[in-house]
Length: 571
Image 1 (cartoon, rainbow, N blue to C red):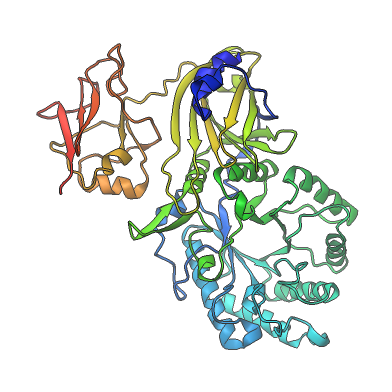
Image 2 (cartoon, rainbow, N blue to C red):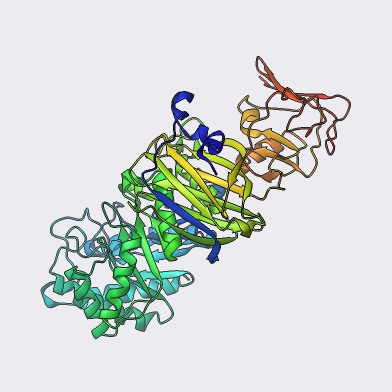
């Protein structure tokens, strides 16, 4: 396509006067999508997090509404009672019991959603980075009696509380950092081997992960090499390799090949990999999340968001995807949660992608039937990047022509601000050639992400009826002056379950297809509108505190007694 043709689609991606679009901007790099090459079914690999669930004794947490987890297809948690007042095993058995209760509550909450639970025994022990200087560690003074008793106690309690299903035993967290392992490296290696053998004997069917280093592997990392040598030489190979991608860690496109080389050098097998903490605090925004999710999906790795809360905050807010809303008295999602919600809706087949050469822009994409969805974001930068999409013929399109593209923008205003559903920037037909589409995307901030939806030329993205649920509910408690039946093909904006339930409690509207659409506007000059698809006579108006839809004779819309329906404040 020409960049002038693309301008009409992506003008909304730019911040500033329209005149800024008059000239083509040179992209800083190009990320690519190959629709023709599948890499497996959608798995939502990055939809986990560390801690994030409120403790509720030993019971399931009920304070965070279920839909906030289900809507993002939450699938894994990692916890072990860290940073609660009880000090853990190192401070006495009673301290261990309280931490185990915390882990049990988090386990039960995770399993309610069908997620895997990665247990953190270092937190049960009490080495949670805030322990006192006199805290004992496994193997102190060459005595392993206490740590052996600890591991066997944990195993017994896991069995007694029916915690084996969906369990992963993560032997020790970030042992190369002194705040988590304040002893010699040799003592850690000996502990790891002993712990692996004890857990394998006590819990033969339970998966073990390790080493969960803070540092990603490199070919010359001495502790990675010595640990790999130790597990190879002692037949204590974990079922799941694990490490963290945080701070200035190299991207997975570089790390994974190096790790595979290390496995060959140490004669070790390829096994599943957990990136069981990802994203530094400043990188927990929609744009950065797209970057990490894209890398995880490309390399088929499970990922859990890092949690940077402390104390009680560590045990809350789904690792800063939601927050306590003082206005509602409940939890609300922030801008990043909406990104994960969209990611969870990316069903179908994952397709091949590649990041830009500077490793600052990345994409994730799926194909379902004749449609494709693409997430695009950046890492730490704002600016202009190109997204090149090849293989359009997979969508039933010819090798050249035009394709409908809908664009959504994901905004960010901090971890404690609900910015609402992604902004729908509309649909346009975009020209392409050689089976390839080129999109020039300007990211207005280093936190902004975009989604692009592509469909064949015969697909009409406009629904027969659109209702902006958020706009309706914004007027306060609402009632219909008359019952209104929209039919099965109607669609609404912002159909999150709590808002949909709120509307259904006051109206006769049945459950609708969940899909973001632009708010209904007054009819176009030619008389067409989204409500009636050309029949005419439909518009939305606001007068004071009253919202009115006047509906024309649209097929599938049943309007009893009157053609105007009002939503007004009850107060």
